[in-house]
Image: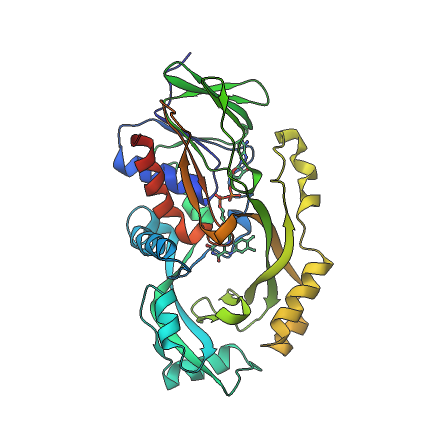
Length: 361
Ligand SMILES: Cc1cc2nc3c(=O)[nH]c(=O)nc-3n(C[C@H](O)[C@H](O)[C@H](O)COP(=O)(O)OP(=O)(O)OC[C@H]3O[C@@H](n4cnc5c(N)ncnc54)[C@H](O)[C@@H]3O)c2cc1C
């Protein structure tokens, strides 16, 4: 058997890729392998709007958001990230409340900002009791395709047809076994499997179960807008759970979707992937719900929406992400679970936490 990898990462979404990139910069001599059951970017990350908001609903999440923003602006992430201007619409006098939730300063939008808003989003409804706030240096947007492409120049091996069905401790190593009975041996393992949940993991004959959680549907609506430009500001309605992200000739609108499922997505073999689309299409119900959410603010745009994207995301009680190490696991096995709708925002900081856990008892 070939020499064990220093680190095996199961799952090549934003969490797994970020972990591999961070491990590469902290431990340049490590051999690192990322395995996925499919080509990278077909999970939640590939369906994401990938906006990095400088915010958090608890002090722990805000600390993670601050650390992530620092790392996203540093090599190698910065090559996959661009800053976005953002405007927030919230009730008048919300400065103090927004200040508690955001990790960067907000200020009332300037007259020029308001004028730009009017041009970028015609027929926009803002109540007389609301104000528009500018967040100039806080928001970022990640390109998940560019992010995954950073693995190769970083000398991270990627194996994208490896469905891990179980991880077993074998002496000083972990053996990851695929559905085709291939085995990857590693000295350290990180599980970053997103909404699929963990493969079976056993150390010293004791199974390690995941935390109780569910998966939640997250969706975005696409509205063709010939005049939309990449540098138009993001528009956020925190109280409506609505985010408008202008891009090349379209606006993507993220809205709160109602569906949840209590079981994680099933682990599937590579051969079953062709039928997977049936699980997660952006369907007629999504279109109706997305249009209704957008119509409150931009009725004209809501009528023009024709398509979108939807996927499942991990949802943990309290909506806080978790980084855990299997009890007593030497060699170590850690798991990162994102929280609903924030995996991209927090990924680099969670990667840092997971690496620290690999070395703590
Ligand atoms: C429409 C939409 C909009 C969103 N917008 C935002 C946003 O603006 N900002 C934000 O922060 N978040 C957003 N999110 C949420 C965000 O996309 C997720 O939180 C994040 O992508 C989760 O990343 P992940 O790496 O945990 O999971 P994934 O990207 O799903 O990656 C998990 C990977 O693990 C692989 N895998 C699973 N099990 C196995 C196995 N047994 N063996 C091998 N491989 C396996 C899967 O194939 C997959 O590639 C959005 C989500 C959606 C759907």
